[in-house]
Image (cartoon, rainbow, N blue to C red; front, side, top):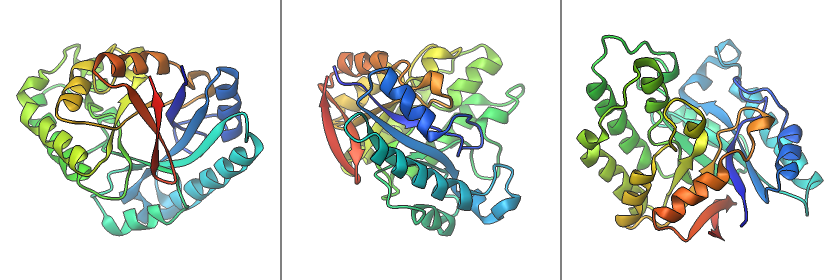
Length: 272
């Protein structure tokens, strides 16, 4: 089995701690064949420059790209290092998103929604007194809009809010209420030949499942989904590659026989 991790964060992300080189060495130690460095770029916050609470993306992302380029050359023959970015909220400010995409000649772009327009990241929210179903409806509507954005390769952690809703309330929302919205997202991904990410970070959190879970991955496949990527969302070297085998097994049980990594935005298919 070939193991590849398509979602990692180096210390060029505001919430991560290890260098790109340290992340790559960890990948080699764990027998991975490829790693994508996908540091955070929350697009609408680019306009704040150095005053941004997350730091200056004008500095962080070009440095991430440069560090990944150095690692790609250093570890050639030992590890395929793919230069990526996690592009958050690309639809909130298209001029900022255009700037983000100009930071480097990336191999791989993850698109994600961490927070709704004019709202906090789901990570920071207090869920007491909130109508969770209404919040999730708004979230999936925005993800649907993001899915139609052309300049990315894989849609990250589809069920991202569940990480924090479950931790904050102790309850798992009923996603059957949002089946039509989720199916609409899947159909856009399939039509536009985009990938769906299996994010394994949830296996190590209160939710105890991948994001999305196996049932949704299977539904994506049943609708005709062709491309999936698998990533740890590692924010430290000790998490690189952790859970990739479980993510591959989720894909296999859902009916996939291959998963993808992306080089120069082209899928390279890996047999399961």
